[in-house]
Length: 413
Image (cartoon, rainbow, N blue to C red; front, side, top):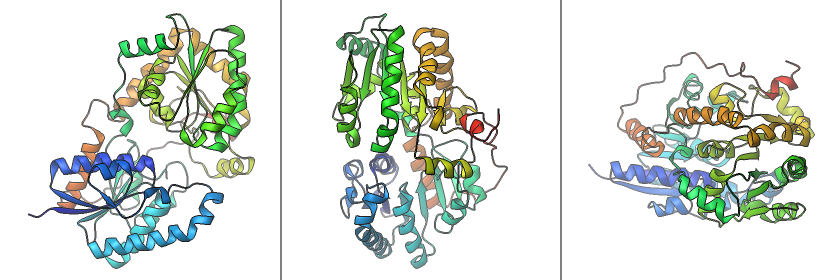
């Protein structure tokens, strides 16, 4: 039996990390050659990338339009290379605007090729028709969330829940956390609030001032409250300028901070964050949190009409609860945020109520089980070797009955 030939495509750093871990796990199970498009992690795992993945890492109309001709050309070139390679399988990772367009062109030319997509689209939240459209080009999906497989199988694809990569991150020890807090000048009775205002300029612009005012309100009751803020590279200048307005102890962790971000998450007594993947990172670190989000007025009006769930928070979705206080749009006021944070900073029982749920959610996401990348590799090989059964659509999970702020936007109690 010769080497497997696998064509793997990722279009952004998070997908590159998934791809690198998957390729490493695949290579441990089977001799394989990798072609495709990826970044640092995938290249380190043995990929010869056809071009620099950073060409695809753009977001927003203002960034995409000038580069649209290049992106369309890369879609054609990548699809043509897959067709010429005729791999044992094509593995596309997230970035559906690029990867699934490649898969669509490949499927037309090679109708029997096995196509696997890593990271299920959020059809449980909105645009459910995407799954049926995706099924025309994709055979099998690797899902990060436990409730996603039924949605994919209902559309005609096979799907395995493989676990979320957040559970594979090694958390710091108590000794490491204590040393880090001491390095920040924090004593055992001092309190630290982690701020995570987002990784996009629009998020920081719309939430930043409210986050600062929230800190000011909290410091009326807790004058020595320290602020710790890991900064994403994409918004470093904006966040530094924002925090320069805040007196008192403020510790900024730069993008190149290495382990400092991991330590900061675990060392904070509570966090105020923009809703997103960061909520899972905080939960993995056992850090109680309050989440907020605000988008443009027009986008909010559209989302309120098409969204199918009542919460934007993955912790609440997985736990089917309102464990993490979440404030969206006009409800994300400094008074509301400060009122929700104060018990987490001052009452151990309030913090424990969250962290107990976090431990359960991490288990549901795969902590303590086979690592997600290894599960993903087994799922890929099962499909290639013909060991994967046909989809068996069952009853879809009802996520519309989970309480949350979107219910209030719809006029429900």
